[in-house]
Length: 283
Image (cartoon, rainbow, N blue to C red; front, side, top):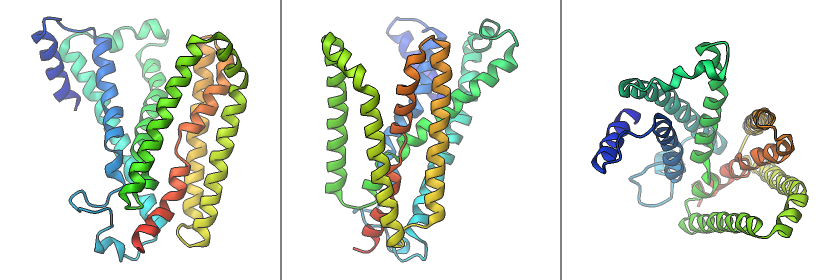
């Protein structure tokens, strides 16, 4: 992707007369593309056949002797493998593109970042690479539970709810920037709000898992994998967020960022996905 986008990008800047953009801008644009595309392709992950006109699973899948939890875990593993492969290919492609452009920016400033040279510089980039993989995977599996129902009206309802949530969040941030008193009150109660949202998310997910186990829509092993993966990724995000907050001398942000990391990671979507698939297969 990077090998295709970069020449087009450079030709576009040259055509409009801007000239060659800074290498940092090229790097940011190319690295943002997989995250944006994963968001666009999220709806396709919940479908079994892109050429199938309805949301129902094809016959060979509907009657296949495979559990609903097994199907969901296979899709989650496929999304994770696709995310990891995407970034393992994108990062070398970006390095090659920057080398072709002749900037050398990626490694020339390694000495400014760390006194231990390029090896330590690359080692420090590993957590960032993991964050990109987790972010891409999160985008791919967003809304998988709604999509597996096979009901278009549910997908549209979920899309409307998510749009309303984003608009409301943007309005809340805008109001906090305008009104000082509101911002102070929001910051005072922000920890309580985040904890309450996280508790509601866990409670909903727990109820969905229990219901799925009672209906044999998912196995205890699959539940363990989902919860374990969510905890590991959440702890990684919380730990890395704490490190970044300390590095920028903002230790007060650690709690908020850590709670926000657990909130943005999918759990409720994954908890209801086997139930949604069971509803779809046995309509």
